[in-house]
Length: 235
Image (cartoon, rainbow, N blue to C red; front, side, top):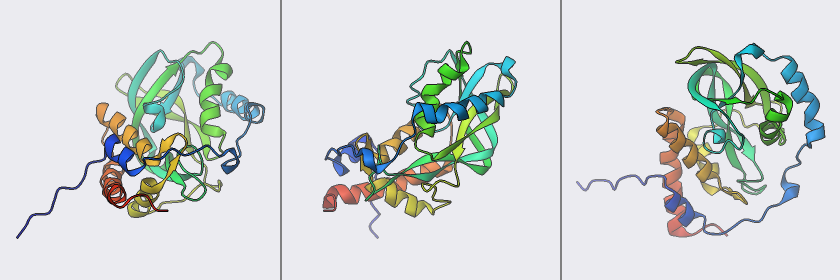
């Protein structure tokens, strides 16, 4: 009996072959909050800060792992309990379009999540946090939370971003096959949704973080991209 061919591996080459065309930005696809809109909520979050004497930390679990876009002085791998990472937020811009929205990660209730805590400068917390606050909160898909991160050096409080279940972008818990369908077909002006998955999984692997959700999706997305690369993108 002939053996089955090995499943394709998710790679940047496969992603590029499946998504050879550049996508133009469409600012109308997603209304974004301004810094002035977001400043009061950031101030209120800082007023609820846990243990300020412990330093200013941000807990990363998705794209912040490989593209933090802020200065930091220290990192610690750690675990947040009561939350897990899941692709559950639609992305109609950046790595998707209104016609073919992608998906990005958020924290959902239950389980645990291994990630990285970044230590930021604490001299002016509002100014220091605004870049990451702007990045995560401008699209109205997340809510901010203070969480405790268990690390080898001891617990520390950190700011992180969880799914906003009231957002129109929130999908709930989709089956992995449905998640893979969206990730494999979506591409925006920042690139394919599959690249976001690949780089997040790559960063987790480099840190020794194992995540079954990411592993399962890499296989499913690679299979879909292989077919897409062979058949050509849908018209």
